[in-house]
Length: 258
Image 1 (cartoon, rainbow, N blue to C red):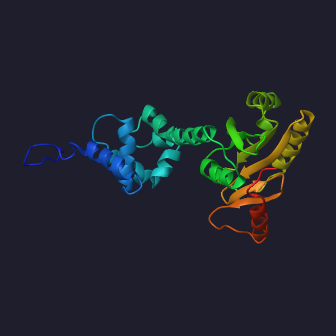
Image 2: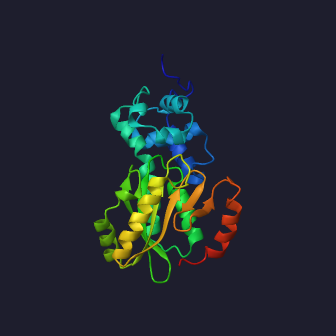
Image 3: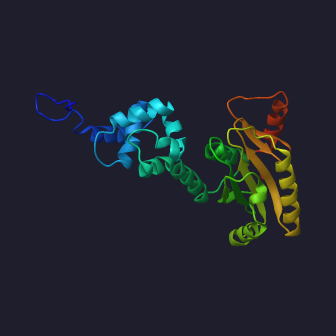
């Protein structure tokens, strides 16, 4: 089928479309755009030439929304006509760019209280599709500093090697740490394996004269503290009957890190 032409000037109707979309993103951001334009913009970064509108439609028809496209596996992406291995890998890596940006942002600043820290963890880990383990230092003033990504796709905090933790403590000159991991698409309540891993890690750190300030689990409904044995943050009002008490206790402790 011949390409649709503008009869007045003989140009393809898609001429200048990339510039128009780029200009819209520059002026108003991505959020006001419709999903097709957002998907096109992403494809512009991956496929340097040509009309990507039909491919944007195919991707959204297959995965329903932009976030599901980005979260899709490389194999599933390659099942869409027009997506080769290289393009699939680039699309799949977009979430890693956001992930790195969030991590790098905290490493350039200080988080002064737990409420800010929970905000950050919600953004960083709540929707991650695989399990991740992080360590954060707590300095002498109580500020949270220098997060480090220790492992990805592991099942528990046992994945942390004590040699790596001791090196982190020495390098960043801290003696107190917070360990964080997430439960992808699951509850933040600890499993028996989480509890055992926490106790083992706490004991090992005590032998090293270091303090485990907290061990947090981020899940789909909130953030759970293994040290406090309670919910520390709830998402989207998903409240169980005991959580209202936890929230009241949280308000008394969210300005200082002990």
